[in-house]
Image (tube, rainbow, N blue to C red; front, side, top):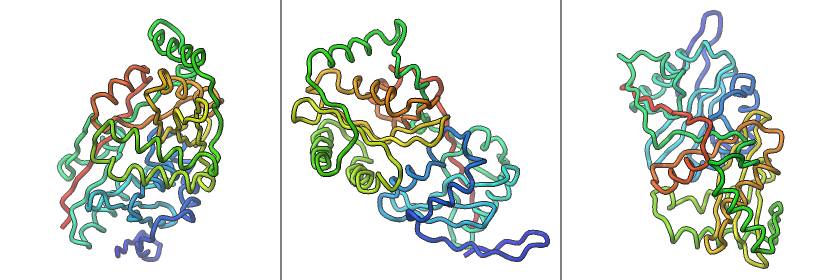
Length: 307
């Protein structure tokens, strides 16, 4: 437990509680500061879904809030939620004091370049890893696939529509849940990464809590076979987020088709879509770059010895 004091204010105890659906209003309270942030860290649905082992906790101090989770057994902090962005350094110091009280070194991930540049390099170890950069796309680009650079994508979309009798629609739990899990398990046999150990759990969580979180889940069938599915969140008119997108590669063009259709249907009226990072997987990086992101949103990791 950490206590801090501000002039003319009483001491407030930092007491973390488990992150639950009831934590959503906390995120919404800080929306005025986070609404223009294109990263996923301030998206409640993403934070909730990625709480894979129910280890994420939150503390709301009234004018700033803090999120801490366990990632592969290590304590990690998210960027602080703030009503006043000018109190960023104060919030970072408070996180360090909390770590000091618990006998830990500070580890915080997901800061923007602008946030990282505010920190004192003599106090903080600031690092950047390309694997964690978010891919940000213009929805109009993904929807229209205009120009020479998207020629092959348009061809894949056209061939899929021409070759298959398909059904593209929103998710229905009774009809689709088991098919989605089966498709994921099939897809999982074709790749390898440390996050795959719990990604299936995350997808199941998205299916179970999708309605409560306001997620948009789309499915693409060819006959009775599920060819692809995707999970999305529309935060506001500026930014939407794609959480998961998986396809059965035996249906040529399924990935390109569901990508284009979701841009057209799910993200209508939204300017950007964040399709997350590539976690260092070479094939995934190549695929994401082939859609020509309008920007790579770099993320910074900050460590500080607080003991």
